[in-house]
Image (cartoon, rainbow, N blue to C red; front, side, top):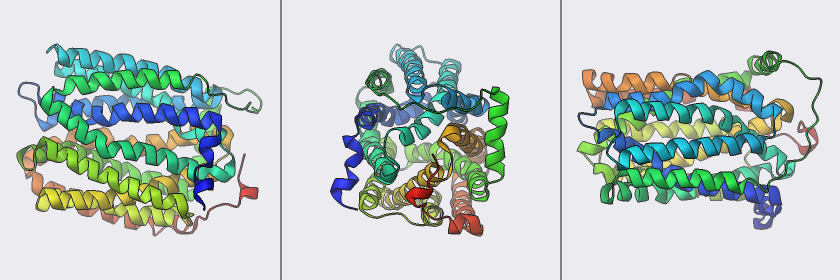
Length: 410
């Protein structure tokens, strides 16, 4: 793959505007993720359990509404769904920032507004995942997905560190306020995007369309196998790395050090993204599941010996592995699922992948306080890698190939 072909998606006007929208939005989100964490921990008497409750409050509405979001995104123009979702996120994040900046934030108010964000994300996420196939030719799916990953991951190299610096210098409220502004700009940048007309079959009920997506999901071996695994993997990541990780960091490498760890993971994502701009990814799920097993390493190190240098190196390796899986999964879905039901299938993917996250977010705080942070983190790191390798026992996962362009659905 030449550099000219790697950058070809940016010559498509619709994709270019969408790319800009995602870029601006990601800039704010990467700072806000660390800001919200420490906004909760700054509350009087806040614990890891309190942080888990706020994170779970965002995830639960996503679990409840994700399938309906997939149906909406298959029925309505996907850019319209994204614009409404972005505007609602701008409003809710702006309210969180105002509460934090004025010192009026309480656990219940942060949890309530996080729940609003989760509800609107339930509609936006399936649309965001499925709209790419309408913006570029099928031959450009790999570079288009890789460019989006590079923009996101490039910003996450600096975003968490900048966010941590803002938190230290000004407090978490300002980072949250910046994120609210980027959600608004992101919605405006989608206005010029024009999607091609979509052919729809006979109108059916939303329940019938959900059933159609479910039938495809449950009868596709590689699809349900990977999603089932990620139900456990994401619960471990959310509970061990994202909930216990900042708590352990606070007492060891510090808040700024935790920002460096998150940025190192993002740098690994970027480095692998550059490689994948030039190298065609064959056997996308074989390589994806094998490589993402490395994401268990920083969890393991947090439990064994949370030194900054070691955590930074393992986070970099984990990021590279996550990028291989991310591209492989997007290609597997976009090349093997009909565009007319792609949002619905992505919604089943998201639902299965996130359904156990609230359990991890809620349970890991008390579990760490009861059994000790170190043993819980060590066991979680080992379990993460073991699950990834177990998935490769499925032949349909190991052997799924890239599809020839002539055979690609849609």
